[in-house]
Length: 319
Figure 1 (cartoon, rainbow, N blue to C red):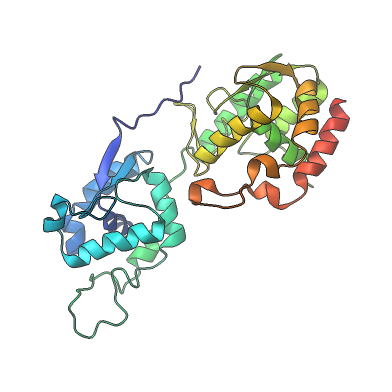
Figure 2 (figure 1 turned 180 degrees about the horizontal axis):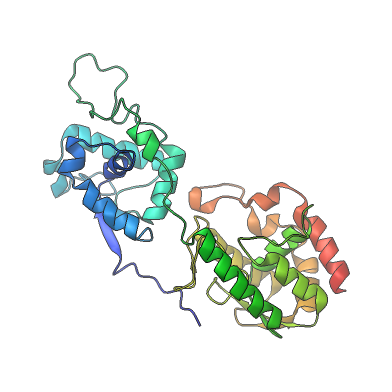
């Protein structure tokens, strides 16, 4: 069994928000006084080696705007940069995210330095601009961190996990992946295996043996679908994609909808009979009326009729 345990207490580092911008400039080939002052190269070396490191934002203020000791160590321009970064990323002092998640947010929400490190209208020179702000270092370096698994590692996991699934007389699957299988079945291209998961293989397994026992789990650690994913860490049994908390909620919401609990075992036939009765639309589990943050975005599969079509196809095969 793989344990999905947190390493937050032993794998965390405090960081001032504007230092993320400096890291991107460094990644793009830049050097500056700020990069030297905050020892950005040393900080980024730690992050590049360990993208799952938890970063906690600290700075001149706490989460309600009261001054901290760092207030007296920063310039007004640095305080403003920190607040700009927090505002654009939708975060606050004290918030903790993985380095991987934060660099993904940067690539989406801060695409250039105008208004943060560069002032389009600054006739008096009161607010000094960074010497890198007019260059292209930030843009060159502004990209997500590497995946948890590269293509060769994904291929190895694909071969091993598919072999195990083919030989299994008992399937273990993450609860909400039953819905993912349904969406896959309703797609136009549902006859070709995917490199990044084993959804196709599990669907074939259920079709060939509708009465195979299926044990339902909460999380990716033991799931037969997850191992080939670029965001899966085999050594920890964890998925570190940006949707990790959303998928945790989807697991539990699906359990509630089907009247089941983690660890329950039913046949594939019975499971999809319940899904047909109780989850006729993916909107019930995979879509939010209001998207509050990057972690809580609606699944793209709800934007088509793939789920409904796939449910009809799957129920026909497993009747």
